[in-house]
Image 1 (cartoon, rainbow, N blue to C red):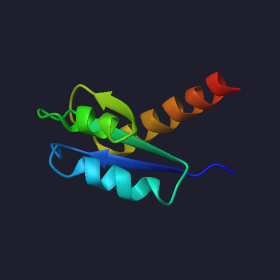
Image 2: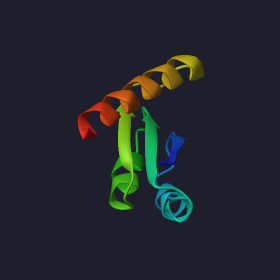
Image 3: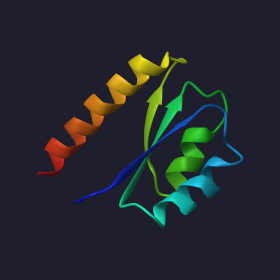
Image 4: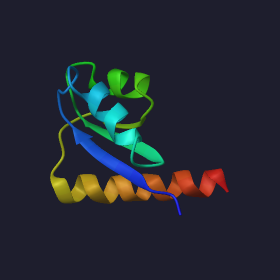
Length: 80
């Protein structure tokens, strides 16, 4: 069984790297959903070892969750 943590983030450049590193201690994969940040949130998350899904604009929670789950499903299919 593979455990994946999904971390939504918006303009968290300063903190996201530490959060990813701490989370990786407890799960197999970390996916950061960069919800239209104007800073380097996605870059910092990637440097810390997370897979990053970036939205170009801020989205409502239900739509964001739906898109992320679809993308994760596609990632799983590609790794088979």
